[in-house]
Length: 50
Image 1 (cartoon, rainbow, N blue to C red):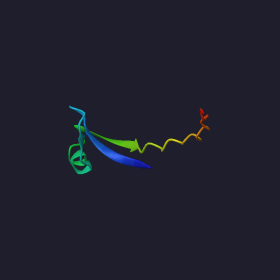
Image 2 (cartoon, rainbow, N blue to C red):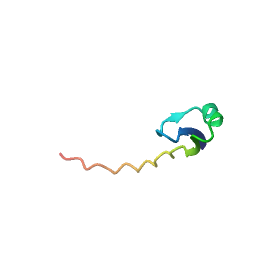
Image 3 (cartoon, helix red, strand yellow):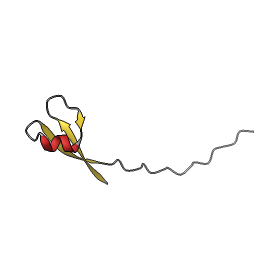
Image 4 (spheres, rainbow, N blue to C red):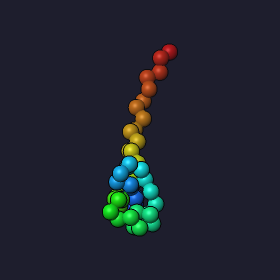
């Protein structure tokens, strides 16, 4: 899944997309991917110590 994010070019802070569209010379609109969930490893059988 991807999302659009607005970023101020002078200080690098995230801003709203509406503000980024109003100031195109001073902002960047980025496409940021949502991180994929990490695959769970199968549980290794624990050796029981008696």
